[in-house]
Image (cartoon, rainbow, N blue to C red; front, side, top):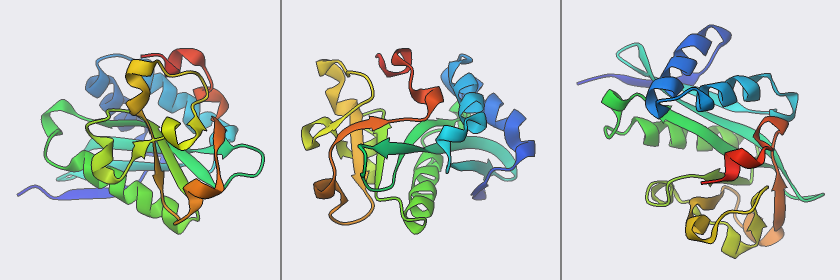
Length: 179
């Protein structure tokens, strides 16, 4: 049985992180976004985790800081998450999500957002965000509304906040929000 370890990334992991994102998504866009976010001061604080299967880097997840209105609770956004194709469907993505959410909760983050697969992220507690009063930085097409999701890490945080989120500068580009 393989040994899966999840740990915080370090600077020397960058080549592995970029490789995972390029191979998982079949293009450079997500890898370029990761580089931009890691260098973006407005993305901080961030949580960047690497999954290792028997010591080999096979998955990566990144959570970055967002602002929710003028005085909203501490919040983050998950973007992107990637697992090498040959390592998918064995629980690595779920372990990355859970480990990241635990770190965020411990650090005091109250809400976490994601624009992602509506049949995957609800397994981890995410629910549609738009119907709860949270607007994405750019409009989400109605047919993709279920992909814009939020997870409450602190009880009552959803009822304490609403409105449009402001992402890190690197994520605040309309082309990243179009499906």
